[in-house]
Amino acid sequence: MSSSAKTGSTEFVKSNFENEVEFSQVVKDGRRILEIEVEYQTEEWDWTGDLDDAGIFIFSYLLYDYKKKILSLRRLKESVYTLNLLRQKMIPSHEKTELPLLEEFQVIFTLYEKLKHEEMSWEDCEEYVMEQISAHQRTN
Image (spheres, rainbow, N blue to C red):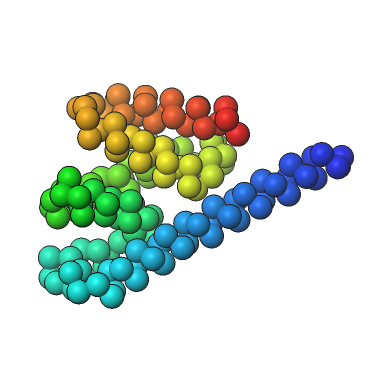
């Protein structure tokens, strides 16, 4: 293996590791907020206890819109579950896209931001997601 190939491989592994660390930190911080802050200790927030790591990551992103009163609690809950489902259903497996974990979420968050301003059909969302994945692959 050439020196440049080893360097490229090492950079890829390092980048993936850094992505995993960042993802884990956001999830850890999100869970800590839910456990510590009194606001989230009520029955209406019980649904957050069922979230997996991806759900907590999405929740952490959307919490900003909730706190800015862009999302109601009901819409926050719906949006977290919907975006998690969209991520699972619309983004092909890592083996097919080689998209790092954080970039998967970036694609979904970009879709979320777009949906805040315009209505889109499921098919339009799928097309938009594929365009975003292609754009990420071209820049990497």
